Length: 442
Image (tube, rainbow, N blue to C red; front, side, top):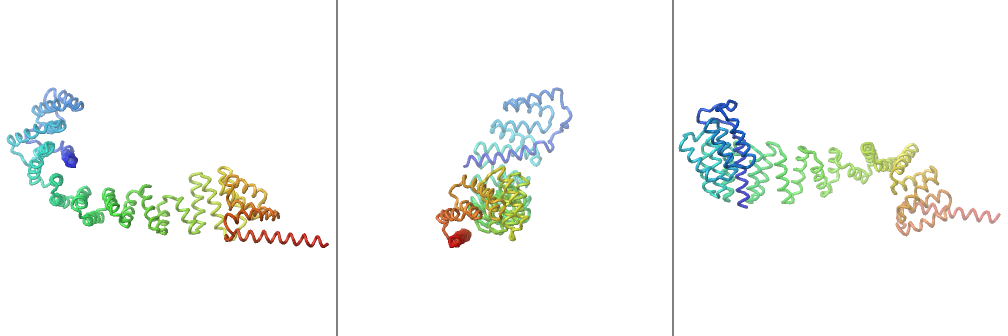
């Protein structure tokens, strides 16, 4: 863990150095970067870059040293230190920086500050953490910069002086309300100091004042998840969704609403976001909001050309048709026929057949559809009920009653529709029997 933290700190220092390498001024008279300082400068640059690209860092250092000695261009000096750093020449860096300060009385210049950061990184690679800390504290006293506050904080964190590390981060945060700084503060509070509530409060305060960025929202989510704080997770995911209305974030919100059984909020979120229309259709049907379900299923069919949605829209259209208007019945049949021609799902086959039977829209054709459904699902009590109803409509009531006995064995006699069908079929048989008796008497 120490090695990992040390390497991370060195990376932070190197990022600071690289992002500031080519700005600032040297203490000596410098030739502008775009002007050749001496004959052959371009050739030395080529040699230096070739050595750098091929990781021959010692050779690259030598070429950059020559370039600096002949031109006094600051970028060559800093490039030389960068090569020393990449090559792991830590003792050489420390020696050179010490010599530099003997020869140059410019401790407050940008160049000297960058060289000190190279020296700090070299100390750290040599595991001389205390020396690195003293160098970093001295540098911070001159710069008062955010980057150097962070470097000092990371060194104290490396030494497990977490309270002190946090104080330096707080000083940096006062200068720059950066999300990366507050994130580091929150991690120290939550992980190292056990101040979990304070860490979350710090992030929440930052997010209220400066917005809940992806980094801050993600960190809050990780903390709330570790604490199993469902309300905190939900509120953060909802804020995150405003930043990134991605499927991943939406699915997390959907899962939480489902876990809470807050189906009203879930429905509203699905309606507003447009995520998971399949689930929204299920919610509509469970609430018996068939018209909404029909319109959404039809929209999905028109969007995706998936006939399953067309079949669903037909069923919901029929269920929403309380008066059983013949126009809507015909439209239902039309949609279901189109659906089963492409994808003969048993559910749609049976529904189509039953509607045609029940509304006397070609009973024989309707029974054909039901029989196709039974070929696919032979033991379905619902499909057997539809077939029995077809035989009833054809006045083959004995055959219908035989099928209904199978239905009762599977579903029981408590089902309302089964009971209605059985009563109608038994009444048909009784009426037929009475007619037969009257004919026999004559």
